[in-house]
Length: 283
Image (cartoon, rainbow, N blue to C red; front, side, top):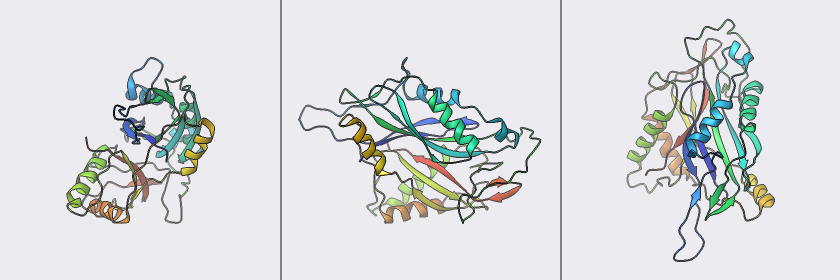
C-alpha cells in the first residue's frame, strides 16, 4: 500500500498547517539499517511549514466566490516525483468550480521541490491537503443570496456563507484534539488501536451543530498502483492504518461526548456540512 502525507488545516481564509506524515514504512532487512523518510521541501529548505506557507501564498480567493461570501473546505492531492516535480494534481473533495480551480492553480505554481527521500534515495510520494476557504465574519458582502448545491441526498452542503465553529472559533485543531482525547479515554481495554500515523477523518455536522457521523477518510489504492507503474521502486511505500468497525463505533461514541458546534449557514439557514480533521499520532 502507499502512504500519504497529510497537510491539515489550521485557520481562516486559505490556511493549511502540516499535520505530519501519514505513512509508516518498513525498513529493508538488515540489523544496522534504520528507517529514514524525509518529506519534500522547497529548494531553499525550510521544512514542512515552509512548503505549507508556499501553498498558502499562492492561493487566491476567487472574486466571484468572495463577492457572494462563499466558503467551504476541499481536499487536493498531488505527487512529488523523485526529481521534485509537482504532478498529478487532483481535487479529492470538491467545493465548487471556482474554489477548486484556485486550489489547483496554487499547487501548480509550486517550484521544483527537493524530493522526498527514503533510506537516502529520492522517491515519489503523494501529498494530500485539506484547504479551507473562510471569511472574516465581519466582512461586509453586498450579495449573499446564491443557489447552494447539495453534496448528496442528505443535503450535505459544500458551499456555505459561514463554516461550522467550535467553541466560537474557526479552525478544527482543537476539535480534532478533543475528539482524540475522548477516543483514548473510551478505548480502555477494548483493544482498539492507537494510531501510529496521522489519521484523516470526516465529520458530518448537522444543522443543530451535533456531530452525527464520523468516518475514516478513504483512499483509492489504484493511485498507489498507478504511481508504482510510473516510477517503479522509487515510490514511498507505507501502510495506512485500518480502522476496524468496533473502533470506528468508538470514534462515533467519542464524538457524542463533545459539545455542539455552531452550525454552518447557507442562504441564512442552518445546514449540514462535512469537515475534515487530522488526528495526530501520539508522540
